[in-house]
Length: 327
Image 1 (cartoon, helix red, strand yellow):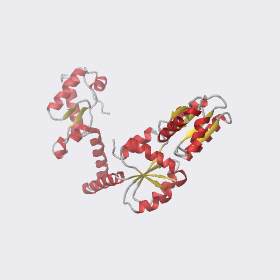
Image 2 (cartoon, rainbow, N blue to C red):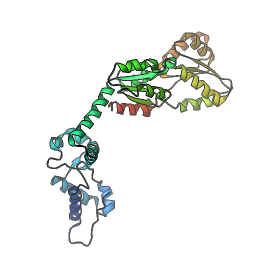
Image 3 (tube, rainbow, N blue to C red):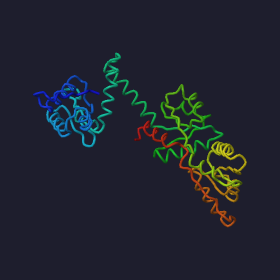
Image 4 (tube, rainbow, N blue to C red):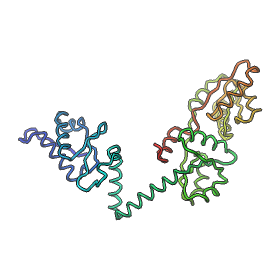
């Protein structure tokens, strides 16, 4: 950070001293085009000047064309001459000045590293084009023996991303990728190693998804009275098995654990009639509710139903949105 120094005993007014120092920082590209100037508060703490004085200096800099003020964002150094070309008036630059600065820095690094402007342009365009093409087709990969985990990922991704998502059995992924020039393949970290090995020779992106930690549900199950029966209902038999193992690790034989997939009516009815608590994923919850309703006359005390928030972690969903350009 540039340190501005004000000489209080100088004949030159303090505001003029600061104005000239900022102009020098801009002229020497210590403050390059798109750079965000310090806030009046930060500069007041550094220089000892009143914030009103600094605001006056900033207004003078703006009047003279050195900076521009973006409402709600801050004061930014303006590109001058042909530095910004016609883009100086582009609304997108006004909305994302920090992004513009990052692009400028990346371009400067490429040029310093020996790239020509045309080569740098090709690199940027190739990467953007590839990401756009990959984002146009999103595949979820899961092994056949636990295709339910894939169905659950597809269910949650389509709910969150609002785009079509295609489920592909891992054993068929090679043949699917042979027929496409680009795609984004997502899968749980449980399966990421196998998926990366399959996709490595192909022109696709592979993005792992973190699963939800189920901390809230686990903490609740820790407090259940001994000899309670817990039902686990999930599209994924793998998730159900993992939940059974985790519960046994937490409670030993204190709890009876029963598992089912939502469309296994026989097992689901048995859980509804026996369990005090039933935990299900979002996609299975309506099946559990229907099973409870069907068996209502045979149940003295209906089980407590718990719907898990999600299978895919929220941060992972947000990162995937960013990677796909969805916000």
